[in-house]
Image (cartoon, rainbow over the protein chains, first blue to last red):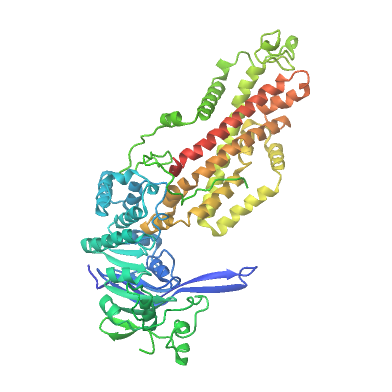
Length: 323
Length: 317
C-alpha cells in the first residue's frame, strides 16, 4: 500500500507543564513547544525542518514518533492514527519509524558492542534467526561504510563520524520506511558532516526512505531536502519545495534566516538586517503572530491575528498576514 | 551517602585499541559478538599482585570454611579445663594448640575456622538478600515513578529514621534467635542504601539517549531495565556491595557480641572477640586471632571490589 502522504500531522500540540514555586502547584506554567502544527510528509521525500534553538523542531520530531506524548492533535502514519494507539500496537509500529540522534556518543549504549546495538531492533521485533541477524548486522555495517568486523567492538572505540554511522545502521536495521534525523550532523566536523549527508542521500535513494531532516543549518538542508519547512516558537512559518524556498523565500523570518548563512564573499551586500535578540519564551509566546516581536514588518494587526499557512504559489505556503 | 563512583558515560578516548570482551555482557550472545576471549583466568593473570593475593586468600578462606570439619585440627566445642587460656604453641603453649586455647580450653584455631563458616555465611546471604531487595525496589522506584516511587521511598525513609538495632531487637523478640532469622534481619539491614543508590542511578541512566533509542526501537520496559539500565548501573552497586559486606560482617559480630546473634556454643568471629575481651590482658590471642580474620576478610573483599569495578567498566579496560 502506498499513500501520497506517509506522515500527516493535524493541529499537533505538545505542551509541557513546568511547575515553579515552593509548593509546586502554585505556579503552573505551560511550555508550548509545538503549538498547532498541520503538515504532511510525502512518501519518499526528505523534508527539511529548520529553525533556531528552542523553536520546537526536535520536540516536533519526537512527537511524531511518540517519544514525547503530544497534548492534542493527531499524527497519521501510513494511514493509521498513532495517537491513542495501544502501547503494544505502538511498539510493533516502531519498526517502521526510526530516529537518528544528534549526539552520536550518548545515543549508543556504552555497555553494548556495536553488533548488539545494531541488532537490538531485530531482536525486539523478532526479525530472523540469530544467524540471520548476524548477517544483517554485517550487511548494515557495510551499508554505512564500516567494516563488518567492527561488530565486536564498543562505541567508545569509534570517532564521532563512525558513531553516527552506527546510529544510522541501528535506525535502518528493522527496515523502517520513515526516519526522523534529529540534527544528525550538527555535532560533527565539516568533512565528516559531508560524509554523513552523502551517506543519508545515498541511503534515501537506495532504500526509498522518507526522512524528516531536522537541522538549524540551511546549507545542509538545501543540499539534502526535497522540501523545507521553517519552524518558529512551535509554529510552522513557511513550507516550500527546496528550489522555490531558496529562490523566493517569503516569510520575514525565513528572509532573516537566509541572511544568517555565511557568505564566502565578504563584500556581498545584505538587503536585510541580521536577526537580533533571542527567541521569546515559549511559556509566554507573543499574541497573534509569534514572530512579530522580532519582525521588521510587524504592524499593529500582527498582534491580534494568528496567521495560518496559506498557499502563495505552487508548493509554497506561508504563515504571514502581510504576504 | 557514601562516595560512589557514577558511570561516566561521556568518558572517551581512555581506551586501548585492542579492547576485550566484558563480563557484564548478557548470557545470550548477540550476533556478531565474539565469544569471550578474555576469561576469568586471563583477567586474574592481568590483575595486580595485591589483587591476586586477595583472591587467593579469599579462595583459601572459602575452602577452609567449606571443609571446616576436615581442616580444623580439633573439635571447636571440646572443652578442657586443664588447658584453659593456653598460649599459642609457638609462644610457649604447653598443649600444642597453634593459636592457643580459650577460657574453656577450646582450640582457638578450630573455633576461628568454624566461625568463618558461620560469619561469612550469614554476611554473604545477608548482603545478597539486601542487594536484591534494594536493587529491585530501586529499579521499580526509578523506572515507574509516581506513587510506586513515593511508597518505596517512604519505606526507605522509615527504615532510615529508626535505629536498626531496634528493628533487630524487635525481630528477635518476635521470631527468636535462629541463624535463619539472623540472616533475614541482617539482610534487611542495608537494603535501603541499595534502593536509594539504584533509584538515583536509574533516574540518571534513563535520561540517556540510548534509552530513548531503545524506546524508539520498540523495546519493552522490561527489556530496557535488563539490557540497558542494569548493566549501566552495575558498577556502583558492586562497589556498594563490597563496602557493605564488611559492615554486615561487623553487624553480625556486634549482634553476637551483645548476645542476640549467634547463640553459644556456636562460634562466630564477633562472638569470639566479644568473649575474649575479658581476657585481653592475660590472653590476647583470644581477641587477636578472630579479629585478624575479620580484618583480613574485609580488606580482601574491599580490594577485590575496587578491582572488579575497574574491570567491569568497559571503557576503562
